[in-house]
Image (cartoon, rainbow, N blue to C red; front, side):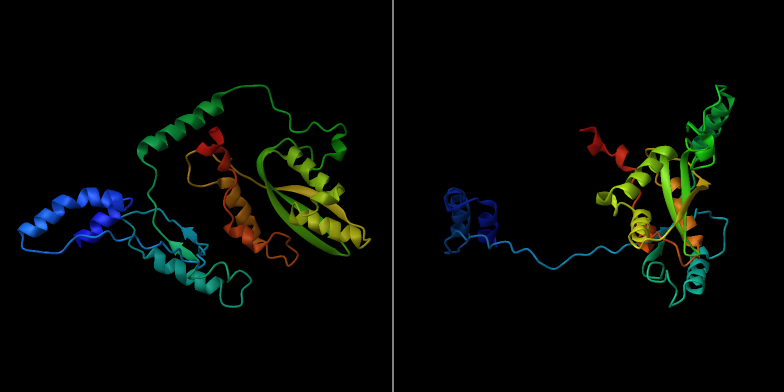
Length: 271
């Protein structure tokens, strides 16, 4: 035991010989005749087994000691009822991929701060902000609201009597997001930027006519540093889930995608 221990903390045999003298003397006084010898450390072998992390969706209802209803049991019963085997989203939303954990409600101090902040923002009187800066307002893609921020937009592509839908988020002005979309429609090198651009290029290569319209799906709050949830991303996922159209362009994997709006608040962005 002591031989193995000294060998492990010694970088080589020379250091082992320097440190073993007092231990040999202690063994001789105790009646042992064993001579300590250096044992090389066995090589460290790393497992090549693939480690795959499971994508888990968390349901975090607020905890309240006055509530006697078994919310967890009720929730999983609804899960089995509305996402049975054979459902299009059953692979993503099932008992193995959805977990439940109770969350605490904000304390009184946070509630008071949020109410005060809301009241201060409402009292601010300033010049009305422009909602559109298009040269020809009648050609605005978003009904004279192209400068709106923090929204989930919906793009509808009509071709051959079918209407394909696509949802996206815009934390900044919608017009900058719209410019990125139109750029991906013109340059073939950007055709794989979004599912919408893929569909547009597919229609163009087939030589078909199409019409594209934009609208605001829903307004949301932008992500703020330190918060655990992003209202913008959650609103987009809600609209995707509730859209039962078979011509939805958004992929199911977007339901478990991480929020990209948190990245700018990471400490790594400061260096």
